[in-house]
Length: 124
Image (cartoon, rainbow, N blue to C red):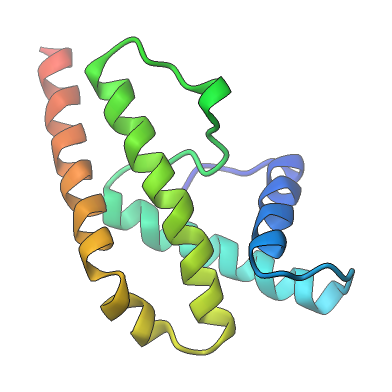
């Protein structure tokens, strides 16, 4: 898992809270969501086999190579899965997340395999 700066964490926390319709400031809630962010990033990075960029936006994309384009696709899928996994964690329904998002998780896994192969070919 890529180290998140405190600013990156605050940005992610804000995005997740917005997704969850949480508009209030509460230390307990922020701590819980922060823990969910870290565990979800670890899970999704392991699924992808790469450290994804959960703050990637179209304005920060690097589209110079096929590998970069694939990484961007993986990162956007990871962002969506991150938000939804945290929603399910808060609802104490993680087993439902894995069954409801199985096809997306498999896609992330497959993208990761292709990404690894593309990077191996680039290095040769």
